[in-house]
Length: 275
Figure 1 (spheres, rainbow, N blue to C red):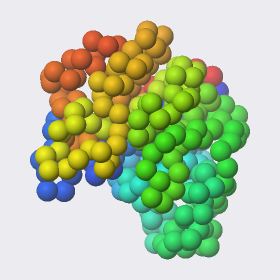
Figure 2 (figure 1 turned 30 degrees about the vertical axis):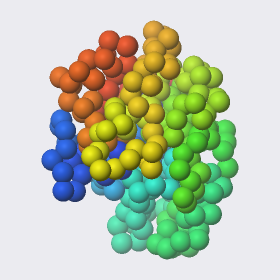
Figure 3 (figure 1 turned 180 degrees about the vertical axis):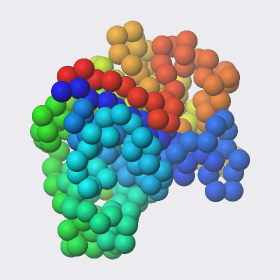
Figure 4 (figure 1 turned 45 degrees about the vertical axis):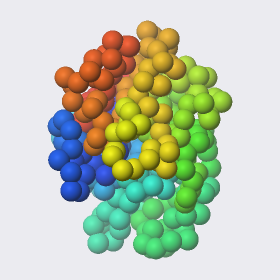
């Protein structure tokens, strides 16, 4: 069965523009993606503060219209417990989503966090989310498998993972550095489509704030580290901070990205995976 990856957002957790900022380039929703099979079965990867607009877009796409379920999505998976990646779960509560429990595939630490804190605990107790803890691999449906890949990232609340779909697509919006992840080359090399953390392009991007406090690999580091892999797979940069010049397709940074054989993700881009 064929599957379509639909990129639902490409901005860092605060979106673009963020509150109190004009941002750079065109507006962007917070980083998320969905995988939709031909029969309409849908997996949502990260549930952002922009989830209502993102689901509204999904409703207009061709494969999603084949759905028979009353649920907005069939499956949810989460990378970690930072603001932009799970707080949209409130939209699946009894006030907003009158449907059956959504299968929610997360790491044990993410499951513990949701089960120990309100209002997330109420979503579990009220049978709005059916939380399944582990790292997989799990077969969710014919043509849809899921594996969670541990990566180093600030662990104030939970650990962090990349999301591997069918061992073809890797969604990895947050990581501290490539050097801190020994499996980086192996994991990126085994996927033919990779959506990778590109939060910042330079260390002085946010005046008055040290990026040492919010570590991410710089865009140039990513181009240098994985440029030799770009010839036979799609390396797509996502999770752009509102300050990142890569938001502007005419910037020098965007030109460097294209010259290296990479892409900058755009909201609502679609990628067809052959079954």
